[in-house]
Length: 183
Image (cartoon, rainbow, N blue to C red):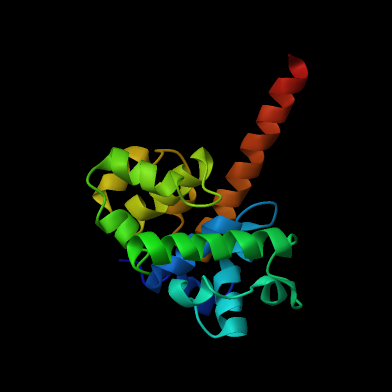
């Protein structure tokens, strides 16, 4: 298991992502329309503001104020606070508050994909991204068939690797935009 997941600039946040499976899920849940670094710093900020990341506790809390407090956890604090609350409810109710049960108790790769896809805010791209982290950083064998071979978040193993990954991602998007304009 990784000691840290280098998805943000804060070493404490990176360690939390590796140590707390629910923190990892929260980072992915809010990784939308903000930088990767900001999304994955979010779980630590949330924990610091409300005192816990325990899904059973978060499921019953109003989280919007914690998301709005400066610096805001997300540019859409209301929607993302609701998403995290919904995620906490799913993990609390379906997995007994243990997020890792989503992957440790999956019967096979198809079951893992279904479990990930049932999480609030997790579509095909997030399933692939989370599967890459599970496969490459956390050694979850059932996730390997879902993980891409190309540069992905799961292959990020240092602060420099994160910068390289983001640079490659920007270049790929620019190529896609250029190709679309030529059509």
